Image 1 (spheres, helix red, strand yellow):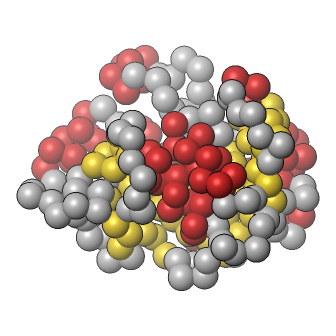
Image 2 (cartoon, one colour):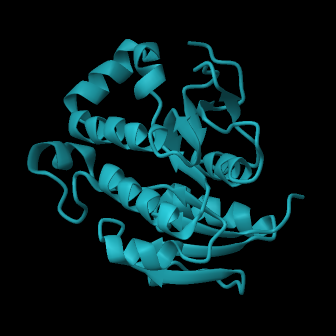
Length: 227
């Protein structure tokens, strides 16, 4: 196992955030779970500190980043995508990904923290041209504003000057799984779905090892795709 670290997870109460925390704890790390309602996480472990705060508030983020060795970002909007498309998000700012990531990067520079791993989305940036027609339709009809914000988020990461990794999972599921995903820096996909737990395992790995630094990594299920 790699040396135990103190790692901040921003967006900790989402499904992938929680899966990432579980993976980090299994590896022996000290974890700070940062979210607006971090206290809602039912985690009974002395390895985990719950910290309430808003990723879009710079002061909250500066306080959160201090004293950590690395940061993992799993920010997103968990509300119904159709409702968000029609009326906007009710509980989360539409630009939470880009603004939150920008705040984290600024705080990392302030505190001298180098390693950053960010959950993005397959079909953004380098993989934009690799989407199937069904994903293009879904992105265009329902997720257009969220994808636009994710594009800005990726640009913030690429221009940050820190040691970054972008993780781009395909369709997320809540399936039970105990495997590492298929990870491709070339945008290749096997299965067009992936468990949040498997994504969490990858994020926990990527924050430690050097193999993925400066890369956008497509994450998919490990089986052979029939599509």
